[in-house]
Structure formats: structure tokens, C-alpha cells
Length: 114
Image 1: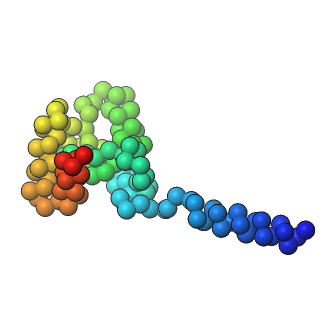
Image 2: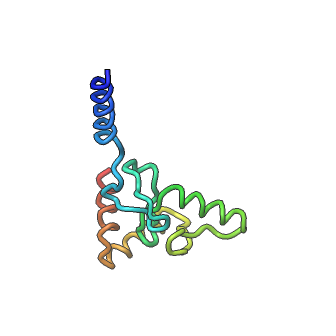
Image 3: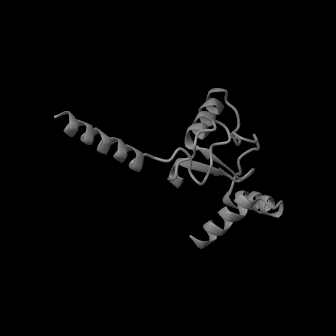
């Protein structure tokens, strides 16, 4: 009985190790809360002003803070005002690309292909 229980628990532990989410993704961590960014791209937001990838939790907390204090919407990382149009956002990304920001270039290439 004990041997069977031990084998079952060893199998459970093996499955936990195999199938748990990694502690960090290839995207790194959120620059605000330092938690690992999700592999799911819908759970993070690229800020076009500084080309930082922010977790949705920090972005949401920033929006709530701005609404409560009746502030204009700004980037939670650099506090730059958010772009009013997609064209302005694209100009911000191009400015980052011209500054040799590799993350901005990678985002630009991926968005053009999609």
C-alpha cells in the first residue's frame, strides 16, 4: 500500500514540474511590478512612447488611479501622455526604432507581418 502511494505521489510531483507555467517568459518581467510577463500577448500592453511591455495588472491599476484622481491618461512607466491616434503611436514607435530600441523594432516587424 505504501509503495503504491509513494509511486502515485512521485507521478503527481513529476506532472506538476512538467506542466507548471515557467517562472519567467522570453518577454522578461513587467518593469513596474517585476512579475514575469505572461506568454499570452493579450495579458500585456506595449506602450508606444517607451516601448515597454507592461502587464495588464499594472496598466489597469494606472487607469484606476488616473480616473480616481481625474488625471490625463499617461504611460505607467514613463508618464508620457498616451497617443491620441494610431498614427501618433506609430510615430512614437518609429522614434524608438531610430534610437536603436530592439524591442520597438521587433514589435514593428511583427505588427507589419500580422
